[in-house]
Length: 124
Image (cartoon, rainbow, N blue to C red; front, side, top):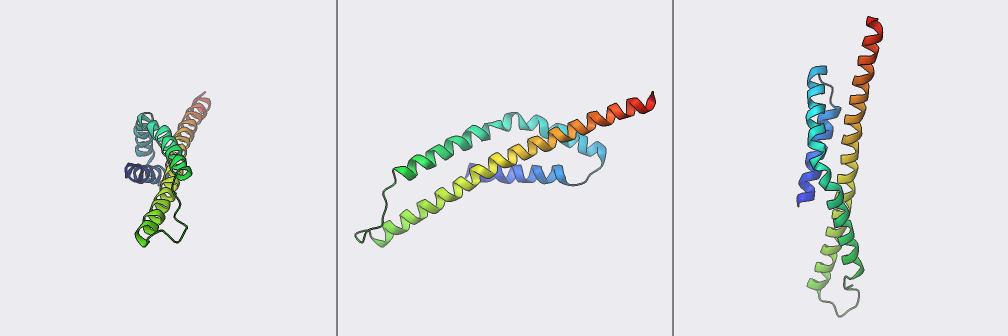
């Protein structure tokens, strides 16, 4: 459940960064999100731990393929497989979105520094 909220928040931040906005607002938004990114790095090891946990559970899960399984056991097994697949997708999306937000902020700061250098050269 936590991972779902984190992915939604990261998606919202990515949208905020990519929407066109005035330069002053964009600079302040990028600096604010850059400050948020450092403590938000916890998502990468958390997602890694989740992936390892899903892998371990998948390796040690009792399969329900025989005819002696009841309908409820088969449903429980299928739900656990679907939940594991959903969590794998969420983990990869969380890491990918974190990386995208980090790169967008970094590119914006590089562009800003290049604009300052260009402005200095024009003034000289």
